[in-house]
Image (tube, rainbow, N blue to C red; front, top):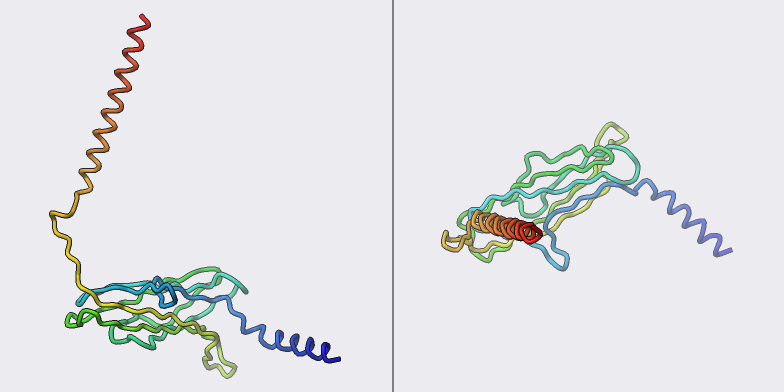
Length: 184
């Protein structure tokens, strides 16, 4: 009897929470989970990174996603915070990161972004569905300047490749013509 009650409760639990299952997702090019992949920038630098909002699995319906910057708003900004992601598609959301020029080297800005699905409420209002977070650090380091002497122009490799090909073709032509002259 206890097993039947347990099974019944599990079935009810699954049915009740079935509509919580969501096909949305979010990914970022940087993260905090091991092994970490922080964003490295220098004072005064401005960079735009893209969050990838996904609606590619599950029920085929469009979803609206709202983005909120929970931590790091002093250096991050969004042009807009709500996006419609059509069923079976992905949406790239640009996030602008601007480091103040007076930021000391070694400063770490923890960034925390919350992405929520938005659903219509019963009374015509808006209710939030599921939520996912994106966390990463922005580490401030020195700007690395590459001097012109250390740069190797890419065209020199191209010319070397062309020269090698010309020499190879010349050797092949000479070898073929020698064979023809020996046969005569």
